[in-house]
Image 1: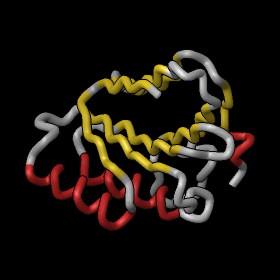
Image 2 (image 1 turned 180 degrees about the vertical axis):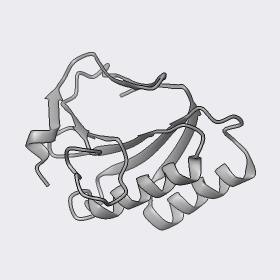
Image 3 (image 1 turned 120 degrees about the vertical axis):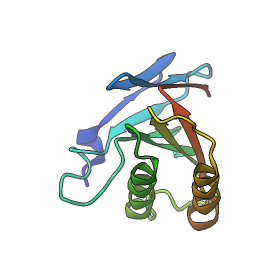
Length: 141
């Protein structure tokens, strides 16, 4: 895996990605060093399932955000995030690395019993907080 080739590293005030009418925006109020990594089609190019992007925050890494921009199939998005977290377990294994995963989907509703089960499973199995939202997510770090 070639992180350098697939990463854009900067400390811009706004770091974002858009795909199929879905958006993920980081307001980098602390001007932290953020590495935006294109996972699907760059970091992982074989037939394995994987998420779309990940963001590594600070150097050394203090926080990781895994991102899947999906249509309606939230279960498939969960599988893609879980697989990517597993692939990168050694890189993101430190106890000081906080991990969060986002699914941005076009599915409504976003908080049904099935989504609550996915959030619980992700926390228990991967030690990662899962957030499921529709269309757009904007966070501040």
